[in-house]
Image 1 (cartoon, rainbow, N blue to C red):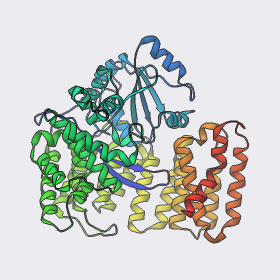
Image 2 (spheres, rainbow, N blue to C red):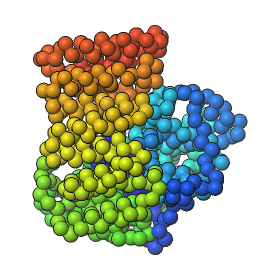
Image 3 (cartoon, rainbow, N blue to C red):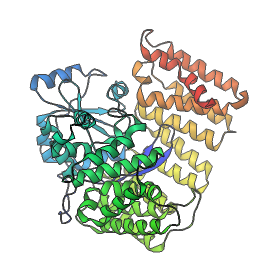
Image 4 (spheres, helix red, strand yellow):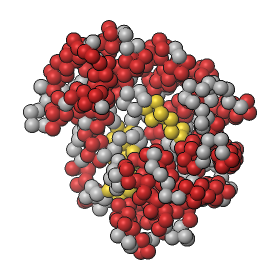
Length: 539
């Protein structure tokens, strides 16, 4: 992720933009970060990635136990921009390659056989997720993929050297033993990928309260860790709509962080990613507090955008953050043009990103996100032009087509939005990806053209016809994608107006379910797809 604004494209083509930036930057005078090998040429040596035999990891953990090494698990996808940014800036670094000799590096692509079942086992959903595990399979930590490459190495080394897990550190604090925690343990808590926890440490509804407690108990000497935990607590509160324990204190803390050069840099990812959430959480629309806080935020973002010590991707994310700040308080359908000076910044940052991204991996990461910055700024024609120029040389052009579909939807061009989404599905590769893209296309058809019964039937039938009658088809993202499609189809059938089509889909899926092993849990999951959809549609 490394500073790139990231699309979170849910199984049903739900477009949500998150801004992901670098963190753990210790000094404002840091020299520009240059990837170890930022070209298409591989380094002299490479990581000796191990790939599981289907959904079986037993041999890998046996290898780890025999060598007394932890396991580094990477879960990603070929098309995923943040995954490609990690490949372009971290996995090809010589220091990462050398460090990989001290653990068993496991590469897990979401489209490979058994991957979705392993996703369920390790409770991973978002791409990329990176987990450090002991040889016995217990989890040490989840690594934050948004960090800058050199700082990723710092966090990785911290996890390898500590021997203790984030779960153990959290338990110590919850048991009143926080005084015995080392500074390293506090840093592990602060830099843990809480956004990808998937209820491993705490339930989602308890995350904000837990992070707030950690921030309060963190020793004053650990100002960096304490500030990160506090900001993460605010973000969690904003996302789950919970109340802050002390809103005035939270506002004052945010202002102190923005005013402190060291804290600004160590919290760069939070300030870039979640500026709109935090502005709305901490201040009222139209208030003097909102104006003052937004001004300080923009000043920090301008500083990041102009800092040649940051990567081009990080500077681009800062501009994306400025666009998000400028749109705080606007209605979703507000098409009022942004300030001309900001649009100039956007165009300059995008041009720099386009000219600087060289390798295939890097361009798959940078170009869709640069195009999205243009889209968010209202420059849809320029975004389209950039994406279309990239299509012939893109690693996974079907991802770019989804952005083109989103742009067309913003313009109100439903026909073009559906055509691009259909092209994306047609071009998609890999069983899990095709299921995600196909079910998303069905959902988009129902949203934009519910009257086109023939096209909806053809698309839904096409998705179901590609399902492989093997257990791993009905795990993790695959299962959720199918259930979401079923939910949309059930809602489309409101009042029984498309009952014949729904029955056809159910019969088609039943035929797939019948081929699954009778005792396998996925047979019930398969049979329950439309039942789950029915319950969700009614709710």
